[in-house]
Length: 227
Image (cartoon, rainbow, N blue to C red):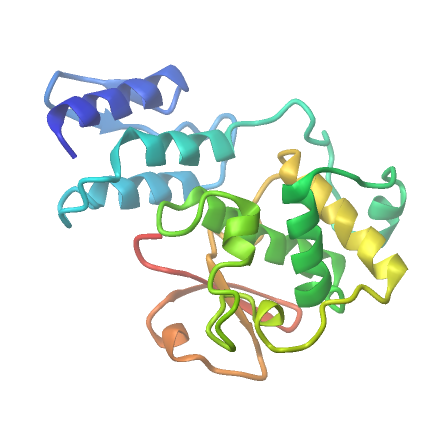
């Protein structure tokens, strides 16, 4: 990252209240916990800045801005969130555009058998990937990354050869509400910034080196280094 890009990045952080500038060539990042106590933002910022030492010149301010916007509170986010079916039942029928449809579909095929909390956790992983410069910057891009190559996709249902047909209307309506809440800015506090997960029935090679962040229902959650 060039000095100019670095200064622009810290100026952006300062404008959003996440850091203080102490000099032209140096800056001390101070993550604000007053709005969001989740330490994930600090870890993500450190990962982005560490990319400079790894020679990734493209990290720049765009990636930092995308990350910060994802953590910025949204006015449409619910004031209180409960990980219960009763809470979801109290919410209006969900709807939305392409991004909402992609997230709803992913939750249906990946987590409809999970608890409500587990469904929110899977949604967190997808949105954490969207926020990370290591993955596509849209929900649909994340969900369909690698689709078309059998068993080489990121989410198995998109490349397992089976038809993706929604047959359980009630289950879909529930996960669609989860998707709507998450896209509207519900907090991502269940998985501590996880970017990967797997069921307890399997043990993928990457799980040996990634940091385990949570276990919810039948899923184990992990954070990829530098994600």
